[in-house]
Amino acid sequence: MRTTRIGLTVAAMLMAGSAAQAQVSDDAVKIGVLTDHSGGFAYLVGKHSVEATQMAVDDFGGKVLGKPISVVTADHQNKADIASAISRKWFETEGVDTITDVAGSAVALATQEIARSRGKVLLISGAATTELTGKACSETTSQWSYDTYAFAKGTASQVTKQGGDSWYFLTSDYAFGHSLQRDASRFVEVSGGKVLGSVRFPFGSPDFSSFLLQAQASKAKVIGLAMSGADLLSAVKQAREFGIVQSGQNLASLVIYINDIEGVGLNVAQGLTLTTSFYWDANDETRAWAKRFMERSGGFIPNLITAGTYASVLHYLKAVEAAGTDEGKAVAAKMKEMPVNDFYNKNVQIRADGRVMHKTFLMKVKSPADSKYRGDFYQQLAAMSGDESFKPLAESECPLVKK
Image (cartoon, rainbow, N blue to C red; front, side):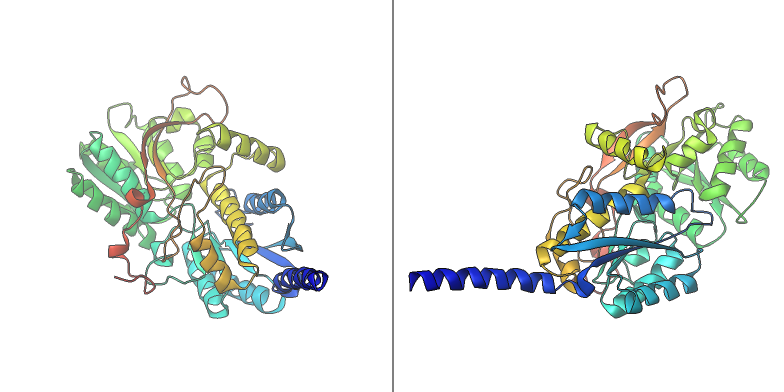
């Protein structure tokens, strides 16, 4: 009888293991990298997000619950309708279990609706709108890397507290720019500073001279750049040509990436303040990971989206393993239950609204003389916890949040 009991116990264990494996749909876990391969964000994401995803899969071991993990990718062309069509096809006919990156706010919001309706996990590392964890939040979505609230707050509040207590904004004249200026203005004032004025410019402006002269004439200590992309780089270059920083005013960017700093060069960008959630040169762990990534990617310096993509995929795979299934709602719940731990996130929680509560950092761009090697671009001025960085749940419009 004892032998029989042992045999039954072993059989039960084997059956339990088989049941866990049987919970993997299509006998594989498939990850889709929905990104910009050909547009204005491609230099930041694109193939680099694909490489970050594959690196996370490789580091995990290439299998989960005994089943292979595969990676597919597509170009959403920065169009919400194309992103919706791709994600719908992926989920319904191609066996994709989760989507990551999704650079661009409109694209991310459209994809989130497709994922929500099908109970699929969405790992957003490339979009910054707070609506993703606000009124449009979903129980199967998590937002990694950054959002506009955290970066506006980090730069505006910290720079103001450190003496930059008068501001003038150069603002891109569309919803993204308006939102950045509105949030940053609030944090300037809450921190004891004043907003002396602002000027809006049309998206894609080739010439910032008149706008910069207005900012210079304001005598504000800080010129806040509520813009991104090509507009931001043009404004920074022209500000240098006009001698604005040299004459004593400071530039503060509300959204900028380390690859942009490398693009314009330290001679142009030196002195610029910014907020980031990841810096490759922060410590031994980040340097070791970044070195591996750069070897795989042909020397690309990983930015905050790259790191967020890797972190999101690794945490997703850990949750699949812990949940014993790739069923979306079960995995999303397990992701929130488990703390996020990787080479730069340490015991980070994912809130009920899907916000990943990692740290953010205020940085100042070094001068060429202070930079010792490629990528040695930042001096850390302040570190902020997740609770200090992101919108409090008490202010959340997410219907999943209990007030």
